[in-house]
Image (cartoon, rainbow, N blue to C red; front, side, top):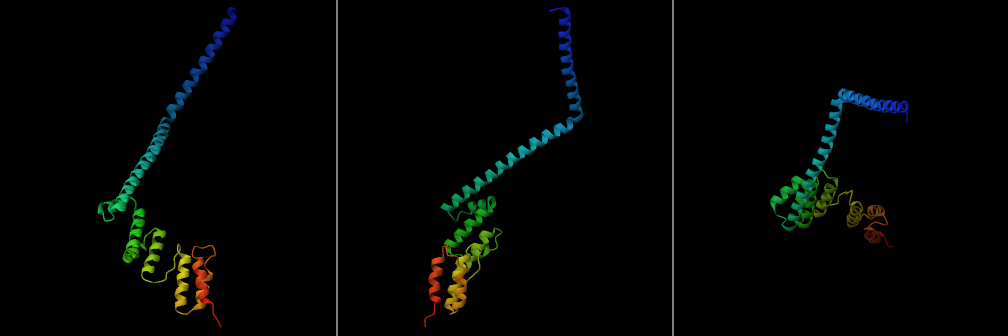
Length: 192
């Protein structure tokens, strides 16, 4: 290799090193210009993901405490501490537990109180069961067809066969109460 070739090789090497050094200076200049934005973005990401992990851990802890309280209440329904814990940690689960207890013990007053619950399912089925305990007919979203059968039955007891027919015709054929509706339709048939 000649001296001229070696000089060109060294010149190329220095030129490459010079470009690397120039890039490093540009990067340092860019970092100094935007370091607050970069650190703010890094801190925001750390806080975001840390906050999510903290919230998930907190919610998991609440759920475990509520489950433990429910298990205790299933064994000892009168445990006041477990009731309070369940009510504080998971109010919807507490409302469901209260509903089940009220239906089992036929506590109309508790069901009446639950009928104003902010959970629409609990409110609707509580209102329905409270009306059943009071021997009243009430509309229900979740027990709609059963309520129709009850209304038809009450109409039949009062001798209003046409109203009963109307109510029973609203019950779908694939409904779980369709067989009861068919049986009641037979009572509406008039013989001559």
